[in-house]
Amino acid sequence: MDLFSQSWAALRTAVAELPDEAFERPSGCAGWLVRDLACHLVIDAQDVLITLATPEDGPPTRNAVTYWDLLDEPPTGDDPLDALIVRLAAAYQEPRLLKFHLDDVGAAAGRAAVLADPAARVGTKDQVLTVGDYLSAYVLEWTLHHLDLIAHLPDVGGPSDEALSRSRAMLEELAGARFPEAFSDADALLVGTGRRAATGEERAKFGALAGRLPLVLG
Image (cartoon, helix red, strand yellow):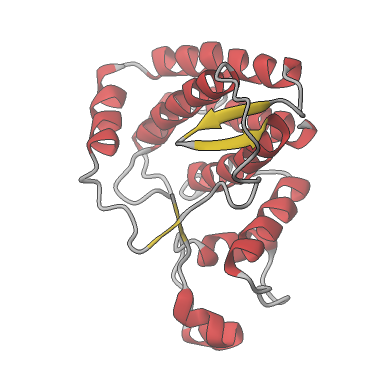
């Protein structure tokens, strides 16, 4: 839960400190500008609040890693929610309004996470998880989106080493295989999820795993 709080705070701080012009730059999410990504984070924060307020009595059906489904195809942008996020982001018009909303809802989600009982069970997406596992799953979400944020903003600080290492471990568990040690944690995440195309030499290092990449999380 500490890593959830740390990675979420780092991501929100990075967005809050962006100059206005950065919101019109592309992000690491295909087809999304930085402003679209920031709007998506508002939705993420709302999801955290909703889930933490949705208790369940049944036994857990997923954990921090199996929370994620592996999809057959990457998003195309045709999903209604993806399209809605782009329209919502444009509706903010001024970056300060988007920053304000993310800070407001994001801080509330952060406080709710700190106050939640890690052993309690919550429901989301027809799944049951402990609060601890649910928040741990979101470390991967925050870390990947922090990398998306800085993809074309080289002067903006990235996620912490601890968040990168934990996220790599979760992605490797999903893959059922270790990524090559020659890859940094950030590169393992970027290549492993298809955010960056691997070179021919890099694909060779992945061996048989290369044919299963990218891992598209849903």
